[in-house]
Image (cartoon, rainbow, N blue to C red; front, side, top):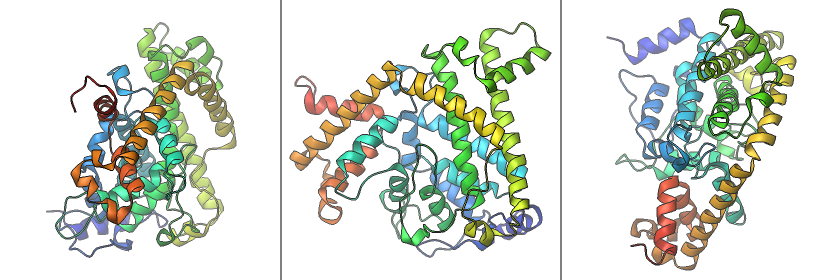
Length: 384
């Protein structure tokens, strides 16, 4: 029978010295007896998976609003893809796969409905009331908003997972300055792996969704260097693949090449900078998990293509602006008449303030729930 101590002993044998070992955790906010059969990070992963906020990701926007079609990625399928990519990288680099998985599964758990459009709307609405970003909200979800245990609020996750949620950093993600989580120190390598896995996932899978939606033209994508290289490799083995299979194989190759480049470059950086342990990682002022300069150039070309042709496409822009109006009007009508909030939320107003309670309520909504709520409040023929 494998017990927690056996898992920790196995980590000591397998993991790199600069990986975050489970037995070295800084622990939890509220003291509790650890699991007999799971490491602390495995337990965190399980708590995240069973949370209400995690399940709601199924009906939250990635790029396309849920009702646009069942075949587009949602915030949940994106999260699972990030987790898979991050675990592959961590395994290859001998980092703590369980910690990586927990952070990856929680990295978007604070995301509001309608993707980044919803986040932008709440950020503006909360500008003078503590602000809003989904990293900060994710930490609030796991620390306060989830109600599952009799002796403490939230999920009571370990310090390292909470740090990973807050310090998650990409083009779309910015950490909040939380003194308890030591904002002046660099995050673990496990957190840095999730950052890059997130970028790999949304860059490459957004191409897939954009092609399916007819918003991207394969002729235009074929001009990108990364795409051209992948096509050349595929044609060496297969001359005449059906279009659907060819696209899948190209995207698979794109991800594989980026992972290999990342692992090779990152291990060289760790070696060249003399990183020996987690303490060295935290003191190093730059990210150690990174691509080669050549790959960064190719990825920049891909990113600029997606920004111009997908994220700024008129259909995506229309959806985003419509979503911002939904969020703004919902927020303002609750602000005007708080009595319209659920009784369970009205109770929280005295402690958290009206704006924060409204923000929490809206951020927890799925796309579908937000649209239904909008109908109830603004459509005179809709039953409330």
